[in-house]
Length: 247
Image (cartoon, rainbow, N blue to C red; front, side, top):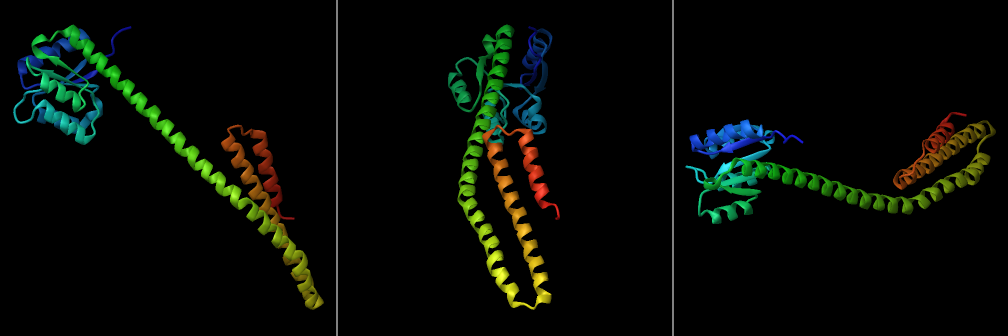
């Protein structure tokens, strides 16, 4: 399999070193290389298009702003592009500090070998991709957990209010049958029919409401049981619509 071409940001104030390494990475490894002559210039590039770069190679010692300073700034800006630190001989402490700040690896400049550097770059990119994939999966699982918790709470609420709704609707229907008829008898015959029509209309609307609530609860049950069938959903829809049709 042909190695993947990556977009590399090379940060080094040594123009000769940066140009030579940049050309080798282009010619031998087929990477796209952008060179920043200082950490400040790297900052400006990252502010404009951080997501463009796959890997950053940065020297440690540079005037005004070191590679560690750049790492700290990236951390503060939540720029997660993987970094490989280029260090000089005797800079083990710097390398350790760089790793603490989030650098993926380090390479000593005096021992720089293009083949080894290419391996480090590819391994760094693969590790970063693995971390990103893992973070996405962990976030997905967290969302599933939160959704499950919310679903359980909604189900508890529905289980609590469903009997209350049924009782309230039954009471309304019962009151219409008893109290409504008693009221009718107290009215003149000319007004009794109008009241009975009104009470019948209320009963019809109450029936529609009850059917709709029952249908919604059933839809909820099917949805979160993960086995909803299209035919059953269509049946519930037809039942609700039929009930809502004017007599």
